[in-house]
Amino acid sequence: MKHALMIAALLFSAGGARAQSFERQARQISRQVSGALLQARQAREHAAPAALEPGRPLEWVPIPGGTFTMGTDDQDDSFRDAKPIHKVNIKAFELSKTLVTVGQYGECVLEGRCTKPGTGDWCLWGDAALNAAVKDYPVNCVDWDQANQYARFMGARLPSEAEYEY
Image (cartoon, rainbow, N blue to C red; front, side):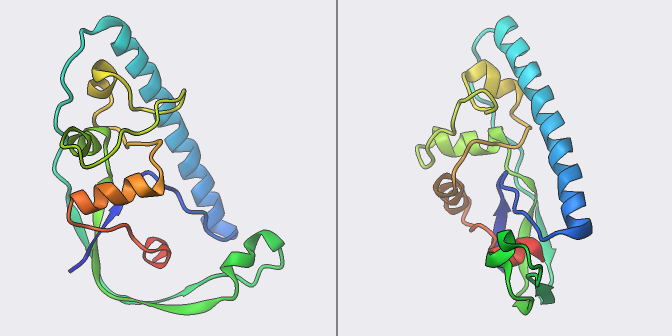
């Protein structure tokens, strides 16, 4: 069975209740990231540098195959890439139960198989004290290539757009 990883990448879904649900989830994640950044900055100010601790092991959830309807017929031009509505068949696969954490991604960086994530204002990656404070938070500020590097490191792959929406 193929494994697919969830790296902190949110894909937009087409309108309606799904969009409202996405907005709620995005606000919740934004609050969590803001809290993590505050905690990390405080830890950075008060902690001596420490080595990056390993992240918890990935857990896999089996996703049975099936068919679902994907896409939209919305007339809004911003949905042109999601047209038309069509049936998609998905084969069974396994998906990581949670998003990849800073600690988990850090193991790949330490082994030289992944490049370091970005370190901007909203990024959770930083020096050792910052990484230790947020090791269980989802890694962010990684691009598709970095996410793909990590997936290969874990012997997995990234989910397709259809699998992610399924």
